[in-house]
Every structure is written in C-alpha cells, then in structure tokens.
Length: 540
Image 1 (cartoon, rainbow, N blue to C red):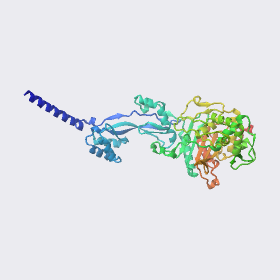
Image 2 (cartoon, helix red, strand yellow; image 1 turned 90 degrees about the horizontal axis):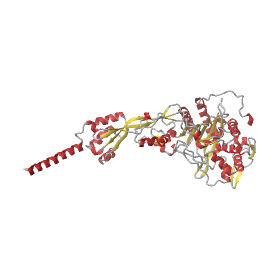
Image 3 (cartoon, rainbow, N blue to C red; image 1 turned 135 degrees about the vertical axis):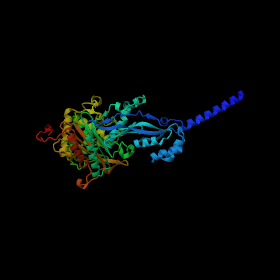
Image 4 (cartoon, rainbow, N blue to C red; image 1 turned 30 degrees about the vertical axis):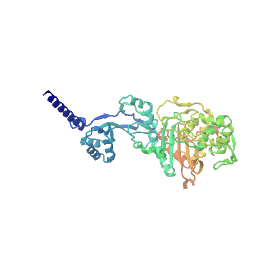
C-alpha cells in the first residue's frame, strides 16, 4: 500500500510538472500585462542650436518593437500578424530570425504611433516595445556637413554629433545614467542659419549656372575664428544619412585638400613684405618665364615687363611670385607657411579633416610653384585661416563651430606679421577688388578686398588643361576686417557671357559677391555711401 501511494504521487507530480512546464512555454496563463513589456532607451542627446537659438538638431520620442522568440507561441502566426502591420518587412527573413528561438530580436526600429497601436492590438505573445529617441534635423540638408549624423541607436557618427559623443556624452551613457534630452544643456553653435541658407542657395545656383561638378564655401569671423556658415554641395540629408557615404558628398572645406592656386599668393606677398626685402613699390622682373630645365613658369595673360609688388599681386603674376619665393629662400618659405598653419593637419570640432599633401622634397621648383599655390595641397579651411591671420593683424586662430569658445585657448600664434605688413595686405586685397581679378565681387556701399585662385586639377598624375578648381577669398570691411568669405567651384565651365573663360574671376568671384550682398545686412553691416575717405592713402 505504501509503495502504491509513492508511485501514484510520483506519477502525479511528474504530470503536474509537465503540464506546468507546457503552460509556461506556451504562455497561455500569462496575464495581458506580461505579454508586452516596455523598456526605456537611455540614448538622449542635447539639442544643437544656431548662434541665435534656432534648433538645428533635436530628439523626439519614438517607439521601437522587438521580440523574445523563445517565448513566442506560434512563429507562423506571429509573422503573419507582424507583417500585416509592417508589410514591407521581409517575411522569410523575419521567420528565419524568430525561428532561431533566441532571447532577443529586433523587429523594427522607430515605428509610427499607428503601427505601435496596431501591434498592441494584435496581441502577439513575446512582442515588446522600447521607448526610443529619434534624432531629427528640422532644416533638412542645411549645414549637414557641420551637424553630421547619428546611427539608429542615436549615437553620433559624424560631424558635431560625433564631437558631442567624444566630449562627455559617451562617458555619461556608459555610467548608466538615464540621459534625458531635456536635462542636457543644448549646444549653441557659431552657425547663423540665415547665412548658411544664403551661402548654400547661392552655391547651388552657381553650380547649375556654370555646370560645375561641385561647390563649397564658408563665412568666417576673422577676429574670433567662429564659422558662421560652411557649405559643401552636393550635400546629404542627416534625417536619412545613407547618401553621406557617396564620394561626392564629402566635406570639401575641411575633409578635402586642393591646390589653392593664386589665393596662396596672399601668403607669398605677405612673406615678401615681412621679410623686409620688399615694399609694395618694389620691382620684380616679370619680362620672361622662369625656367627649370624644360619646365617654364608663365603668367596667364601676363604683362611680360617689370612689375611692382602691388602690380604683381593684382595681375596675379606667377613669374613674380616664383622669383620672390626663390629670392627669400626655401627654408624661410617653408617656415612662413608652417607658422601660418599650412603644413600640418588643422583640428577643429569636426572629426572629418584632411592632412595637407606636401612634396617629399622641397627644392627650388617646389619653392617656385608653391608660391602661387601649386605643388602643395591644403584644406580650404586652413587656407582661409591663414589669410584671416594676414588681415586681422597677425593672429592665427584655430577655427571653431561653437559660439563663444574662448579665443585665447585657440590662438595658435600671434604677431605673425607686423601691423604695417597686415595693413599693406588689406590695401592690396582692396586694390585687387577695385582693379584686379576680384572686381566682379564689388558691391555698392561696401569696401571689399579679395584674392582669386584658379588651379589646374591633377588627373592621372598630370595637370589637366581643361579642368580647374576656382576659388575666391573676400574680406569685408577691408579697412577693418570682420568677415572672410571663401567660395569654391569644382570644374566650372566657360559660358558665352564669360567669353568662354572658366577662371575664378568669371565664376567664383561673382558667386562670392552674390553671397556677400545677401549676408552682410543679416550680420548688421549696412552699406555706407561715404566715398570721400580713403583708408589706404598712405600706400598709393
């Protein structure tokens, strides 16, 4: 009798345990609140604003859906119900992932409220939701190369978004703190979205007009180094950043290097003045080409006569610049470029940055060609930084995309040129905008200084005779500079109205003038019609 009782109890216990295990496996006894679970994402990010408080990037709440395949009752039924709400999901792939019976599987990141409600109503055991964050960029493509983008987990992967990640946000997240966007101080950038829009709009029109491959530009405060606008077209939409990976979407201002052509002549001319060997009235013999074996350095539409330094600048004489650099010497030339930040990688908040391409050996030929912006390739941003130092009195300031970032912490060098040399450069830039290659940038009511650049592109290891990079650097107001503008066009074409010419003065320069005409009033600089004073009378 005792044995029979033990056997019956054992069989009964096994049966109960088997039924209980099956019930747990099927989940049929789970109350509704246990069929679905909610969890919160901790990947909040601070908003990004322009200098006037306009939102450039922010988080919004959104829901993601995932599954716990191990506790799903009927995989076929689950796939049927899920795809009824999310019909664009790959049914075979979804079935394969759920059939693996793993502990976790994403169904879809970032679903709509309507899709969320429909999945709740479907009552699928093992389906759960996560309260997520989605990064949005209300202005679409505007300033995309500065802002960057985030991945599906709201982690910064490029631009300022990545800079934020590496400057404390990732550490906070790893500590387990629940990061709520509302609790994080917004990042106020140096950008002015009005200026940004005008810059991008004008570059886009110029690309279309001149059938250019691409275009780029920036607006920089020469006294603080703050960048008010930076554009590179074609661009991408950070709301759907897959296009950012296309090669032609690169940031041409900070992440590409170019031979900047004659804009480099501003540095060469400043070097001549600072060396003490030249004044603006010094004469250079430009009557015949400079010869290196079979190679000849010639002037484009040259005068082929002795030129004063100021004539050499406004006529953009390659011969004169080469002779100046060789006279001063290659060691001094290299050191001068190094002091102005042209020989090393420029670091800003943007992680996307390029390193200058320098010649392996710096001989006489390099000294001659680098004097007019060939044989050395730098980013347009660092070239702009160098010219800004020429006109602001000689202070080299690392550019920034953050409003109010202390200037003192970003000063790379001071007193690079004397006050007299700096003023002489402002005069020459003004003269070039009045009489030289930059005259198509003139705007009534403003004193503008500028320098043009046209560089032949290197194709297959050789300079192309038909493909150019054209650029323009403008400074305003030139007598007391505040802003520097750079415009750049990649492979612009000649037009009937440009007489077939594709050099900078016919495309990048009028582009720069169009940008300045729009943005200067936005920046509080109204035109003045007092034409009786000459701030540079001492140099005439």
